Picture 1 (tube, rainbow, N blue to C red):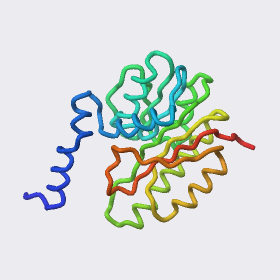
Picture 2 (cartoon, rainbow, N blue to C red):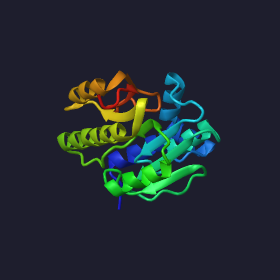
Picture 3 (cartoon, one colour):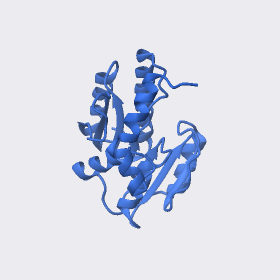
Length: 208
């Protein structure tokens, strides 16, 4: 069956993408690793010994990069409802992070270690219906924030993918209520036409 013009154009763009080529050359599982790479450098998010939780981690590009950056000093936990090929030094939990059993499994593996940073590069499966897609994307961001509120230590950080559109401003207002500082970032590896941005929320205030 012949591909549509739009899918053929996407394939051409994808395989000509410099970050796709770099990911293949450098052994990363996805081009998304370079979005995080820039953010880690720009905002100095990682420090030796940190404990990091990666939500919606599959295929594992972000967990892979964080593990590489931390070396042997720190803990990396990856959660996803999808299976993920193992990464040395990354503890993977397969399941829906909204479920109590999955959260309890994480708490067990943490063994009391406080979480310094929660990462979420989650995005919904795109239906093409913009209103519905935006609502699902914002819901995922809210779920990531709720999760972070349960496990971050005071002063901890959340890095979450957002899409600009309905609900975006309200979400940021709520995020600023819980964190000392919220900054928006659009890394170079984000495609220019994409509405995606990343919110870096630093200085979790805890339950006050």
